[in-house]
Image (tube, rainbow, N blue to C red; front, side):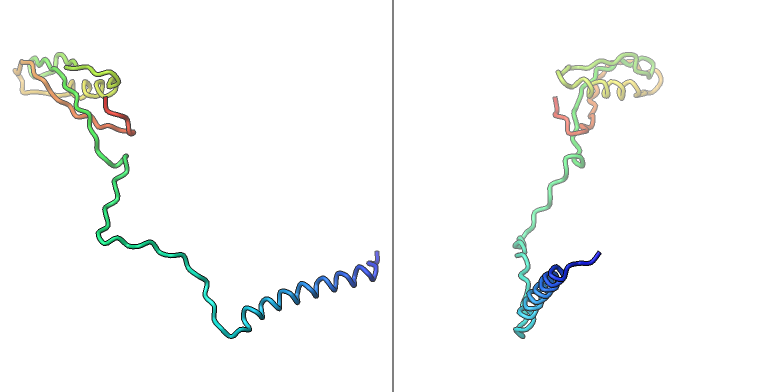
Length: 128
């Protein structure tokens, strides 16, 4: 299939026009003989005494203190209960009971005592 001559002529003129415009633009930029600079974004001012960045919430150590009443018989924890229950602190209290029940005392020790267990506050939960 042959392309008509008028189409070839228009395509040639269009290509020549595009090349001429691009070439003229390039000569405009380079032909002035002057260097041009691309402006860089302004840098933020540097503080005299930079403040340390706050620690992320996950890195901070926050604790919930739970008081546990222990009954000790013959060096072992025979009973443990929460001293002052707080709504919303069930998970912290369960952890404190688990820790308190694992304690051991010298053989022959029998008494009651109050133990304050510090439970880490994980996952950004609010304290009760």
